[in-house]
Image (tube, rainbow, N blue to C red; front, side, top):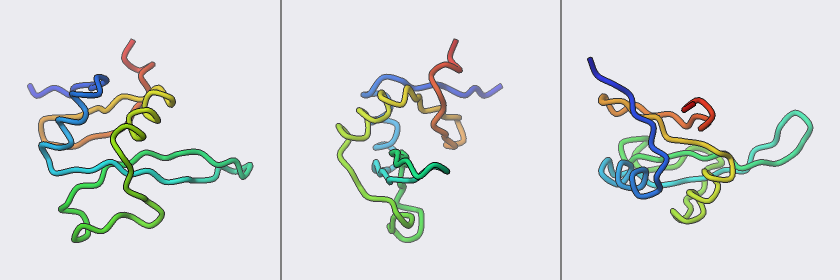
Amino acid sequence: MQQTHMLTRHRDIQNWVNDRHGKPAIARVRNQLGQERAQLKLHFDRQRDGELDCGMSPCSWNAWLAELDRQNLALRVDPAGRFDLVSRSTLN
C-alpha cells in the first residue's frame, strides 16, 4: 500500500519540489469581502510550456516558505507525485 506523506520541514519541501523541477509561486487573491491574501502555488515545468498560471508570480523560496508557515500549511505528497497544500492541523 502506498502512503501519502506530510512535509513540514522547509528543506524536505524544497528538496521534493526541486527534484521534480518545480518552482515556488504566489498570487494575491481577494475573498468575498475584498480582503487580499496570499495564495501559494507550485509551478512545474511540464505545465503549459513553462508559463505560470494567470495571476501567479514567481517568488523566492524564503518568501514562499515564510507564507507557508504564516498560513500554518503543510505539503501533502503521494508516491504518484500528486500534491496539495493542507492545514497542519490535519496532522494531529
